[in-house]
Figure (cartoon, helix red, strand yellow):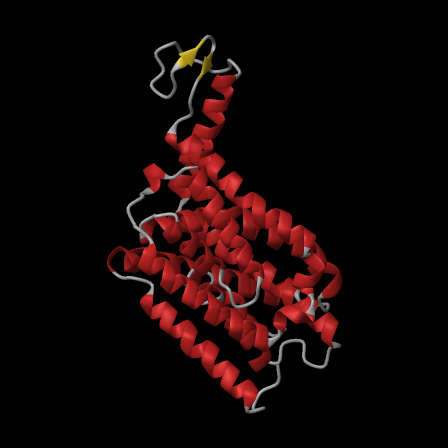
Length: 302
Protein backbone atom coordinates (compact mmCIF):
# COMPACT_ATOMS: atom_id res chain seq x y z
CA UNK A 1 0.00 0.00 0.00
CA UNK A 2 1.37 3.38 -1.02
CA UNK A 3 0.94 6.64 0.91
CA UNK A 4 -1.48 7.91 -1.75
CA UNK A 5 -3.59 4.76 -1.43
CA UNK A 6 -3.48 5.18 2.35
CA UNK A 7 -4.71 8.78 2.20
CA UNK A 8 -7.56 7.85 -0.15
CA UNK A 9 -8.64 4.92 2.03
CA UNK A 10 -8.39 7.08 5.17
CA UNK A 11 -10.61 9.79 3.67
CA UNK A 12 -13.16 7.23 2.47
CA UNK A 13 -13.18 5.47 5.86
CA UNK A 14 -13.60 8.73 7.78
CA UNK A 15 -16.39 9.97 5.53
CA UNK A 16 -18.40 6.76 5.44
CA UNK A 17 -17.93 5.04 8.82
CA UNK A 18 -20.56 7.19 10.54
CA UNK A 19 -22.64 8.30 7.58
CA UNK A 20 -25.22 5.53 6.89
CA UNK A 21 -24.02 4.67 3.39
CA UNK A 22 -21.70 1.70 4.15
CA UNK A 23 -18.01 2.29 4.77
CA UNK A 24 -17.15 -1.29 3.80
CA UNK A 25 -18.77 -0.95 0.38
CA UNK A 26 -16.98 2.31 -0.36
CA UNK A 27 -13.66 0.98 0.91
CA UNK A 28 -14.03 -2.05 -1.36
CA UNK A 29 -14.68 0.32 -4.29
CA UNK A 30 -11.71 2.47 -3.28
CA UNK A 31 -9.42 -0.54 -2.91
CA UNK A 32 -10.36 -1.71 -6.41
CA UNK A 33 -9.97 1.71 -8.01
CA UNK A 34 -6.56 2.20 -6.39
CA UNK A 35 -5.61 -1.41 -7.21
CA UNK A 36 -4.79 -2.14 -3.59
CA UNK A 37 -2.84 -5.43 -3.31
CA UNK A 38 -3.25 -5.97 -7.05
CA UNK A 39 -1.76 -9.20 -8.36
CA UNK A 40 -2.25 -11.04 -5.06
CA UNK A 41 -4.15 -14.35 -5.02
CA UNK A 42 -7.90 -13.69 -4.53
CA UNK A 43 -8.36 -15.19 -1.06
CA UNK A 44 -5.21 -13.59 0.34
CA UNK A 45 -6.12 -10.25 -1.24
CA UNK A 46 -9.54 -10.42 0.44
CA UNK A 47 -7.92 -11.19 3.80
CA UNK A 48 -5.38 -8.38 3.38
CA UNK A 49 -8.12 -5.92 2.41
CA UNK A 50 -10.23 -6.95 5.42
CA UNK A 51 -7.27 -6.55 7.77
CA UNK A 52 -6.42 -3.14 6.28
CA UNK A 53 -9.99 -1.87 6.62
CA UNK A 54 -10.27 -3.10 10.23
CA UNK A 55 -7.02 -1.41 11.25
CA UNK A 56 -7.95 1.88 9.55
CA UNK A 57 -11.23 1.80 11.48
CA UNK A 58 -9.20 2.37 14.64
CA UNK A 59 -8.76 5.94 13.40
CA UNK A 60 -12.50 6.49 13.47
CA UNK A 61 -12.61 4.82 16.88
CA UNK A 62 -10.22 7.50 18.14
CA UNK A 63 -12.57 10.10 16.63
CA UNK A 64 -15.43 8.68 18.72
CA UNK A 65 -13.30 8.77 21.86
CA UNK A 66 -12.34 12.40 21.25
CA UNK A 67 -15.82 13.61 20.30
CA UNK A 68 -17.59 11.79 23.12
CA UNK A 69 -14.77 12.09 25.68
CA UNK A 70 -17.00 13.77 28.26
CA UNK A 71 -19.78 11.19 27.83
CA UNK A 72 -17.38 8.26 27.94
CA UNK A 73 -15.71 9.61 31.09
CA UNK A 74 -19.09 10.15 32.79
CA UNK A 75 -20.29 6.64 31.87
CA UNK A 76 -17.04 4.95 32.94
CA UNK A 77 -16.83 6.89 36.21
CA UNK A 78 -20.47 6.26 37.13
CA UNK A 79 -20.25 2.58 36.13
CA UNK A 80 -17.24 2.00 38.39
CA UNK A 81 -18.56 4.14 41.25
CA UNK A 82 -22.04 2.59 41.34
CA UNK A 83 -20.77 -0.98 41.17
CA UNK A 84 -18.23 -0.36 43.90
CA UNK A 85 -21.08 0.95 46.03
CA UNK A 86 -23.04 -2.22 45.32
CA UNK A 87 -20.33 -4.24 47.03
CA UNK A 88 -20.03 -1.78 49.87
CA UNK A 89 -16.89 0.06 48.66
CA UNK A 90 -16.86 3.83 48.44
CA UNK A 91 -20.37 4.13 49.89
CA UNK A 92 -20.77 7.58 51.34
CA UNK A 93 -23.96 7.29 53.31
CA UNK A 94 -27.50 6.04 53.19
CA UNK A 95 -28.75 9.22 51.54
CA UNK A 96 -26.81 8.80 48.30
CA UNK A 97 -28.66 10.56 45.51
CA UNK A 98 -27.54 7.95 42.98
CA UNK A 99 -29.26 4.92 44.48
CA UNK A 100 -31.79 3.91 47.06
CA UNK A 101 -30.24 1.71 49.74
CA UNK A 102 -31.57 -1.72 50.59
CA UNK A 103 -29.49 -2.94 53.51
CA UNK A 104 -25.96 -2.15 52.38
CA UNK A 105 -26.61 -2.22 48.63
CA UNK A 106 -28.27 0.30 46.27
CA UNK A 107 -31.33 -0.96 44.41
CA UNK A 108 -30.68 0.89 41.17
CA UNK A 109 -27.86 2.42 39.16
CA UNK A 110 -27.40 5.97 37.93
CA UNK A 111 -28.42 6.81 34.39
CA UNK A 112 -24.79 6.89 33.22
CA UNK A 113 -24.03 3.48 34.75
CA UNK A 114 -27.14 2.03 33.13
CA UNK A 115 -25.98 3.39 29.80
CA UNK A 116 -22.70 1.53 30.32
CA UNK A 117 -24.65 -1.70 30.74
CA UNK A 118 -26.72 -0.93 27.64
CA UNK A 119 -23.54 -0.57 25.58
CA UNK A 120 -22.30 -3.92 26.93
CA UNK A 121 -25.63 -5.67 26.25
CA UNK A 122 -25.92 -4.13 22.81
CA UNK A 123 -22.40 -5.33 21.91
CA UNK A 124 -23.03 -8.99 22.71
CA UNK A 125 -24.89 -9.95 19.49
CA UNK A 126 -22.20 -8.70 17.07
CA UNK A 127 -19.41 -10.12 19.25
CA UNK A 128 -21.02 -13.56 19.20
CA UNK A 129 -21.91 -13.64 15.51
CA UNK A 130 -18.69 -11.91 14.45
CA UNK A 131 -16.48 -14.50 16.10
CA UNK A 132 -18.61 -17.37 14.81
CA UNK A 133 -18.45 -16.12 11.21
CA UNK A 134 -14.92 -14.71 11.25
CA UNK A 135 -13.66 -16.82 8.33
CA UNK A 136 -16.65 -15.96 6.14
CA UNK A 137 -16.34 -12.26 6.95
CA UNK A 138 -12.69 -12.23 5.93
CA UNK A 139 -13.28 -14.28 2.78
CA UNK A 140 -13.81 -13.12 -0.82
CA UNK A 141 -17.59 -13.56 -0.59
CA UNK A 142 -17.93 -10.38 1.45
CA UNK A 143 -16.13 -8.41 -1.28
CA UNK A 144 -18.59 -9.49 -3.98
CA UNK A 145 -20.32 -6.53 -5.67
CA UNK A 146 -23.55 -8.48 -6.20
CA UNK A 147 -23.84 -8.94 -2.44
CA UNK A 148 -22.82 -5.34 -1.70
CA UNK A 149 -25.33 -3.84 -4.14
CA UNK A 150 -28.27 -5.95 -2.98
CA UNK A 151 -27.54 -5.32 0.70
CA UNK A 152 -27.21 -1.56 0.07
CA UNK A 153 -30.69 -1.53 -1.47
CA UNK A 154 -32.30 -3.78 1.17
CA UNK A 155 -30.96 -1.74 4.10
CA UNK A 156 -32.05 1.47 2.35
CA UNK A 157 -35.61 0.15 2.13
CA UNK A 158 -35.57 -0.99 5.75
CA UNK A 159 -34.23 2.39 6.88
CA UNK A 160 -37.01 4.12 4.90
CA UNK A 161 -39.57 1.87 6.60
CA UNK A 162 -38.07 2.66 10.02
CA UNK A 163 -38.33 6.38 9.25
CA UNK A 164 -42.01 5.92 8.42
CA UNK A 165 -43.14 3.74 11.35
CA UNK A 166 -40.74 4.85 14.12
CA UNK A 167 -42.35 7.09 16.76
CA UNK A 168 -39.11 9.03 17.26
CA UNK A 169 -39.94 10.03 20.85
CA UNK A 170 -37.32 8.33 23.01
CA UNK A 171 -34.23 10.29 24.07
CA UNK A 172 -30.99 9.12 25.70
CA UNK A 173 -32.69 9.35 29.12
CA UNK A 174 -35.35 6.83 28.01
CA UNK A 175 -33.02 4.12 26.70
CA UNK A 176 -33.49 0.65 28.16
CA UNK A 177 -32.67 -3.00 27.53
CA UNK A 178 -35.15 -3.09 24.66
CA UNK A 179 -33.20 -0.37 22.89
CA UNK A 180 -29.87 -2.13 23.52
CA UNK A 181 -31.20 -5.38 22.05
CA UNK A 182 -32.90 -3.70 19.09
CA UNK A 183 -29.82 -1.69 18.15
CA UNK A 184 -27.44 -4.53 19.10
CA UNK A 185 -29.12 -7.08 16.83
CA UNK A 186 -29.41 -4.48 14.07
CA UNK A 187 -25.65 -3.99 14.35
CA UNK A 188 -25.18 -7.65 13.39
CA UNK A 189 -26.43 -6.69 9.93
CA UNK A 190 -23.27 -4.60 9.57
CA UNK A 191 -21.31 -7.83 9.16
CA UNK A 192 -22.82 -8.02 5.68
CA UNK A 193 -20.93 -5.90 3.14
CA UNK A 194 -22.97 -2.90 2.05
CA UNK A 195 -25.14 -2.80 5.16
CA UNK A 196 -23.40 0.05 7.04
CA UNK A 197 -22.91 -0.26 10.78
CA UNK A 198 -24.27 3.23 11.44
CA UNK A 199 -27.14 2.73 8.98
CA UNK A 200 -28.14 -0.57 10.59
CA UNK A 201 -27.93 0.71 14.16
CA UNK A 202 -29.74 3.97 13.43
CA UNK A 203 -32.44 1.89 11.74
CA UNK A 204 -32.70 -0.31 14.86
CA UNK A 205 -32.96 2.78 17.05
CA UNK A 206 -35.72 4.26 14.89
CA UNK A 207 -37.67 0.99 15.03
CA UNK A 208 -37.32 1.15 18.85
CA UNK A 209 -38.93 4.61 18.85
CA UNK A 210 -35.80 6.69 19.40
CA UNK A 211 -35.30 10.15 17.94
CA UNK A 212 -32.86 10.33 15.04
CA UNK A 213 -30.22 12.12 17.09
CA UNK A 214 -30.58 9.65 19.97
CA UNK A 215 -30.31 6.70 17.59
CA UNK A 216 -27.14 8.21 16.11
CA UNK A 217 -25.55 9.01 19.51
CA UNK A 218 -26.24 5.53 20.86
CA UNK A 219 -24.97 4.09 17.58
CA UNK A 220 -21.67 5.93 18.03
CA UNK A 221 -21.27 4.76 21.63
CA UNK A 222 -22.09 1.20 20.59
CA UNK A 223 -19.45 1.42 17.88
CA UNK A 224 -16.66 1.61 20.48
CA UNK A 225 -16.55 -2.09 21.51
CA UNK A 226 -17.31 -3.32 17.98
CA UNK A 227 -14.65 -1.26 16.19
CA UNK A 228 -12.08 -1.76 18.95
CA UNK A 229 -12.51 -5.55 18.98
CA UNK A 230 -12.46 -5.80 15.19
CA UNK A 231 -9.46 -3.51 14.78
CA UNK A 232 -7.36 -5.07 17.53
CA UNK A 233 -8.21 -8.60 16.39
CA UNK A 234 -7.29 -7.81 12.80
CA UNK A 235 -4.16 -5.97 13.95
CA UNK A 236 -2.71 -9.35 14.85
CA UNK A 237 -3.76 -10.72 11.46
CA UNK A 238 -2.29 -7.68 9.71
CA UNK A 239 1.15 -8.35 11.17
CA UNK A 240 1.32 -11.73 9.44
CA UNK A 241 -0.77 -11.15 6.30
CA UNK A 242 0.11 -7.65 5.11
CA UNK A 243 3.22 -7.02 3.00
CA UNK A 244 6.34 -5.68 4.65
CA UNK A 245 6.47 -1.90 4.76
CA UNK A 246 2.74 -1.58 5.46
CA UNK A 247 3.16 0.06 8.88
CA UNK A 248 3.67 3.67 7.72
CA UNK A 249 0.84 3.68 5.12
CA UNK A 250 -1.51 2.09 7.69
CA UNK A 251 -0.56 4.74 10.23
CA UNK A 252 -1.20 7.52 7.71
CA UNK A 253 -4.56 6.04 6.72
CA UNK A 254 -5.58 5.68 10.36
CA UNK A 255 -4.68 9.29 11.22
CA UNK A 256 -6.51 10.64 8.17
CA UNK A 257 -9.56 8.50 9.03
CA UNK A 258 -9.54 9.92 12.56
CA UNK A 259 -9.61 13.57 11.49
CA UNK A 260 -12.21 13.03 8.77
CA UNK A 261 -14.26 10.76 11.06
CA UNK A 262 -14.47 13.45 13.74
CA UNK A 263 -15.86 15.90 11.17
CA UNK A 264 -18.37 13.26 10.01
CA UNK A 265 -19.69 12.73 13.55
CA UNK A 266 -20.08 16.49 14.02
CA UNK A 267 -21.93 16.79 10.72
CA UNK A 268 -24.30 13.83 11.16
CA UNK A 269 -25.46 14.70 14.68
CA UNK A 270 -26.30 18.24 13.63
CA UNK A 271 -27.88 17.12 10.37
CA UNK A 272 -30.21 14.62 12.03
CA UNK A 273 -31.56 17.22 14.46
CA UNK A 274 -33.52 18.82 11.64
CA UNK A 275 -33.40 16.32 8.76
CA UNK A 276 -34.39 12.73 8.10
CA UNK A 277 -32.08 10.07 6.69
CA UNK A 278 -33.85 10.44 3.34
CA UNK A 279 -30.84 11.76 1.44
CA UNK A 280 -28.77 8.76 2.54
CA UNK A 281 -31.58 6.37 1.61
CA UNK A 282 -31.75 7.83 -1.89
CA UNK A 283 -27.97 7.70 -2.22
CA UNK A 284 -27.91 4.01 -1.23
CA UNK A 285 -30.69 3.17 -3.69
CA UNK A 286 -28.98 5.03 -6.55
CA UNK A 287 -25.54 3.51 -5.91
CA UNK A 288 -26.89 0.01 -5.33
CA UNK A 289 -29.00 0.14 -8.49
CA UNK A 290 -26.11 1.56 -10.52
CA UNK A 291 -23.81 -1.28 -9.41
CA UNK A 292 -26.43 -3.88 -10.32
CA UNK A 293 -26.90 -2.28 -13.76
CA UNK A 294 -23.15 -2.31 -14.39
CA UNK A 295 -22.91 -5.92 -13.26
CA UNK A 296 -25.80 -7.03 -15.49
CA UNK A 297 -24.17 -5.22 -18.44
CA UNK A 298 -20.83 -6.94 -17.67
CA UNK A 299 -19.14 -3.54 -17.45
CA UNK A 300 -17.58 -4.46 -14.10
CA UNK A 301 -16.67 -7.78 -12.52
CA UNK A 302 -18.26 -8.88 -9.27
